[in-house]
Image (cartoon, rainbow, N blue to C red; front, side):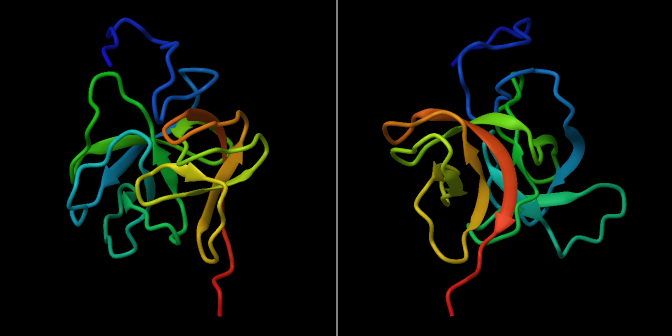
Length: 157
């Protein structure tokens, strides 16, 4: 996908792109952990790196499906891959962004995320909730509007 650098409010959905306003407040002073082995992309769900000793900024890495969620990497029209050490912007609680679905999703469904950073309404005990579907998805890869709300679920015993 090509986006003009002068296009401040893209009208085509892209994973990690804010739905309503392109200038919503967001946390920019987040750093990708040095232990992150693969570059993060827009729409990646991140958690805090609890091993970090950095006192200046939150350090994040790709979240596992049962990790506490810290945020979602937002779309950047200039750069689409963020290796270890990069400063990134993330969407936080109550923001509304576009995310790809892993299959059919109904409006209003609580959403979980997969290891491929797609959202699903299929619950698995212990998986973290990423938010609520504001628009439906018919198939894998459909982009839907997600209101972010981070929660953890009880793991099975």
